Amino acid sequence: MSPASSEYSKALSLGGYARKLSIAPKPSISIHINDHYNSKVYTTGSEVSGHVTINSQTDMRFDSIQVVLLGTSKTRIDAVNIPQATSHTFLKLVMPIPESSYPVPRVFEVGITYTVPFTFVIPSTLTLNACNHQVANGSVQEHHVRLPPTVGSWEKDDFAPNMSRVQYMIKARVHREDIADEVPIKIMETGKEIKVLPAVAEDAPLNITRHDDLYTMSKSKTLRRTIISPKSGRATITATQPPAAMLSPDGQTITSTTVPLNLEFEPASSDVRPPKVTGVTSKVTAVTYFSAGGINHYPNLKDWHRAFGNEGRGSYSGTTSVVVGPFGEVRWGRHLTAQARRDSGYGSESSSSSDSDLPPRPTPKKKSKGSLPSPILYTAKVKVPIQIPAQKKAFVPTFHSCITSRVYVLSLTVTLVSGSASAHVTLAVPLQIGVNATDFHRDSVELPPSFEEVEEADVNEYLRPRVMSVPTVEFHQREILPGYADLDRHRRTVAAH
Image 1: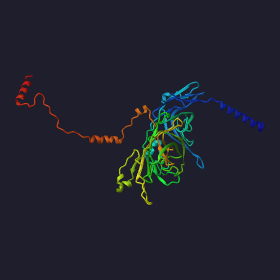
Image 2: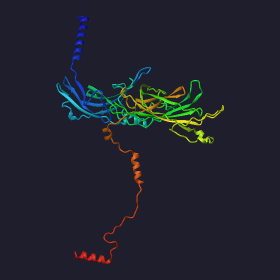
Image 3: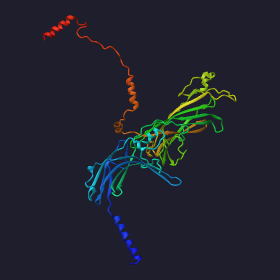
């Protein structure tokens, strides 16, 4: 046989072997979740139940079946040299399968459908093993052992970049042990993703300092009546973190919130009136942080990009406008400055009135070149209603996990008009988004009392006032003590019996 014919016969044999492999029957394994649909959302305390169906086209030996609920976060850092991909499994619930459920012998036979039921309940928290890296304090770890929401798998835009994902999945696996290597071989596997929106209660407000670059809680602006006129005063607007906006357990609706604003105006002279607040506009920015290594602090505080370690880190922002509700008429209150109150020479205006109509305009006085600033200070309070557009975007709750986080920043731009000129003051306020618990979860989950509560109860019991008094003595039938004659009569009565 010539070399050419030999090569040709080898090619034919290899092609036939490949065709046999391609048409060889493969076993099928599928997962069915009861009452499930693609857009269904599971929350804390939700039951995820169903069954795994296994069909084999040939008799197949196996050793074990595993059904698990996995929670995994994944990040990707596009580094200069090589991309860094990180995966963190923070949740793994294994469904116990009793020995009685397995066929004897452990062989999937042709023509027989095998079903394995399963039931999982979305937990309220993770185990401490879910966060085993070093963190700055216990507060950070407490956040890291909370369940994060699904990120990147919603029907609507959830502001998630491709570099950050959080997934929950039911997985079914069939293993067969290799006698030679003593390592189980995965012979069948399938998975089905579910969406999870865990219950998240409102946290305490953040302690924002000047070192926190993401937020601007207060800002001042010099006002002028015209572009070329001297300054008429200085306006300062300070915001307070608003209450959390709470999502419904299915994520379809969200409650409104209100941002408190404190306004101050320091006029350049006593005859200058405070500016008018003509409008407030707002937008919300979702900031997603991701890292190739464990995050040991809150990434939204301080400067996230200040120090890049060997693990690499990044952030991604997405912005959408929000609806600002009517906040009514702004009423300025007139006060004396602290310096003026200490100055006894200005005692005729020592009283102040807040949240009231402005007094009549004072009579202008001639000022010398080196005159003191105006002793008048105007203040006002405004509550700005905010409605987050949950119908346009998919908002997930604020969360911090080991390698990824999500926070929200609410930007408020206040327009002030003084004379014919206007000025804009923009603040950046932290906004927490939480998730309301279902009635079932709220009623069924009762936490044990804390150590402080038990200790306080013991102290209160020890210090409880007690009434010390002589017990009341009651005499029945007579109000005098019995005499000897009575005792003697009693003895004779007893003897007669």
